[in-house]
View 1: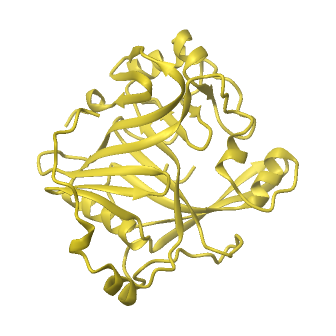
View 2 (view 1 turned 45 degrees about the vertical axis):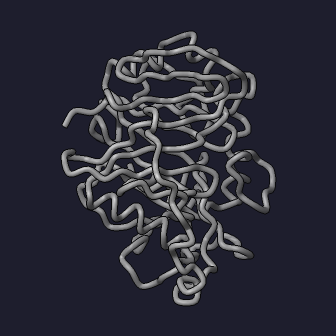
Length: 303
């Protein structure tokens, strides 16, 4: 599966002057890969999946929903996975009987990478501030069939993390894949180009602004280190909660010793128009406040 918010209390702002950034860059270098959010996935319970895929008002007004590649066909009554498309990002939602065999409560976040001045090739690797660590040391190349042919879609890198319930991966995407998808030539890969035929500006959902997660200590350390090595900026540190600027989204990570598995708790999204509705889809609550949409996922999880 890896590859195919509550109101915050006032907190002490992170002071970047406390870190000697010039010394860090001299030691680790600063020619790192550019990081952008591509998509995330969540596995929901049967009630939530049924409500989300059959709620007519949600499907008509909130976002485009489809069953995925290669044709982005509309939902049908048999699919166990659906995709909610935005301008640059999308959300993959899996039901409990999904074909990947993923358990309820599992989630993952996929980022795209780009190296300055480097075109996609099968030998591409991430540029990290500090090479030679276990972070992003594993890779997998994914292909997608198109009729009788197959196109290379992306090469993804990830950190060995057996047993985790919150996966993270970082991928270089192949422009030639868009050639096969749209039957036109592309010199660069862009998220907007991938989503152009499925995203609808007339609907509310535009994209993701921030992702909040609560993690086991092991996952907390892994995700924070991955982003550190990719040069993502630490915006704020409140006790042990980290707020990290990861490309065009904000990632907030809070460690916990009381949970059995890591989870995404809230997703803050941007809307195309002002809306003030609250939508209850089983154990998922979506609250719209102006042009912000907050997905509360906390009721999805049972430890």
